[in-house]
Length: 67
Image 1 (cartoon, rainbow, N blue to C red):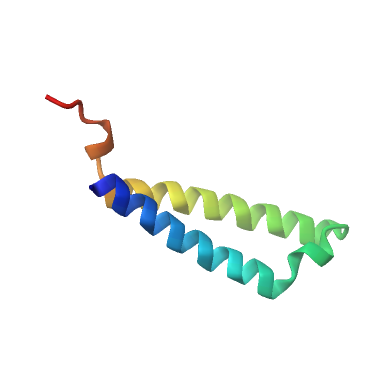
Image 2 (cartoon, helix red, strand yellow):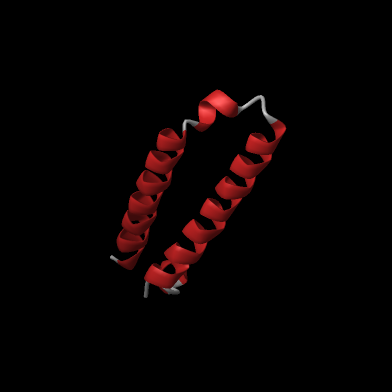
């Protein structure tokens, strides 16, 4: 059940980040090198935060063997 909560937290976080990206209209600035660099750094931070959030919520339960 903790894996489900972790995935749900990541889903909510992803929706928030996607809404922010849409509001900033980052698709219109893909040819600008500074916008491309900033967007790639932002997406990398999003990914690292998603992984950290999953392990923070789910803990080590996803890695335990069924007995």
